[in-house]
Structure formats: structure tokens, C-alpha cells
Image (cartoon, rainbow over all chains, first blue to last red; front, side):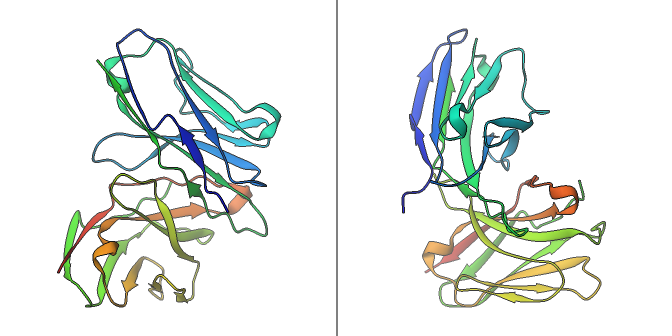
Length: 115
Length: 112
């Protein structure tokens, strides 16, 4: 079974440019998460989807970040415009919540460098 | 969110057992204890979780103190592939919350 797929794996852009990350979760997983991970820190949740609905986006900086999950499957996270401080690894995870079990499966992440 | 405290780093020798401690003195009755690990250049992966009783799976064992204010992840025989950052996380299962709040974790070094 394929795991969570993310692309691109690496992205280098100049500040003020837009950037987008794509995530394909594990088939059948109804919940999708986007995390941000700064160097030396643990991941921080940006947004969580249950099917198509964003149920927790309280940590998403909505002035420049946006996300969508069309048809409750793939998801895209966008930053426009990017700032130097956005350099980090962006992780996507998915899970199927059933009977209280909610193991999250993570993708390899996209490493963003903003110059 | 209830917080956890872990040592920043630990070292072990290959093929020896490793005990990774975690303190969570403010744990509530509905908090599950989860462990994830993150190998270099990869996303985190689930290791194990428990509520009150000790748990075993193919990867590790989780020993939970009787008062639930601390827990220990046990790797029975460390291998070089176990070198990773290990995160101890409390997940509040009340109300269906699936939020994981990661700390800085413990960086485990395994010496050959």
C-alpha cells in the first residue's frame, strides 16, 4: 500500500513569490493534516480536514496561507507571498479515525527554502 | 494541551535495550499517551500508544506508571536504524479531538 505522497520534495524560491505543496493521502483516509516543522523543533499543526471540511485551522496564518481539499482526497497548501521565515519542512499526514484509533501516517515532507 | 517533558538526547549501544522516559504530570483521565519517532529526512512515524495498561507491539513496549504521570518507551534491542527523534505526546480523546501536540522530543543516538 502506498504511503502519503507529497510533492515537490524540495522547493527553493525567492521571497514574495507564491508556492504550493501537494499531498495525496493514503486511500480511504478521511482525515488529512498539514504540519509545519522548523529546524530542531517538533511538527506544529497548521490545519486539519475531515473529508472536505477544515475542522481546525486555528494555527493557519490566513493572511498568506491557504489550503484546500477538493473531493475529500488530495490537498494543496499555498503560501502567497512567501517570507524568509516560512523556510521549513511542510508535512502532510492522514488518518482513518475509527473506534478511537487515529494513528497518523506522515509523508516525507516538502523542504521549503525562501531566499 | 497537557505537556510532556523528555530529555533532549540519549545514547545507546547497538543490541542493548533503551528506555526513553517521558514525564506528563498534568495528564488528564482522558489523555492517551502516544509515541512517534522521526528518522532523519523523514516524516514522523507512529510507534505505540496506551491509556493505562502497559502495551507491546512489534516495534516497542510502553510502560505506564500507575499514577500515569510518567511513561517509558522501551526498545528491547536497539539497532542503528532506531536512531531518531522520539516524541512523547498526549492526545485528548475527549470530544473526538485528534490533535497531536509535538514537543522537541528525545534524540536517540545508537552507537555501533
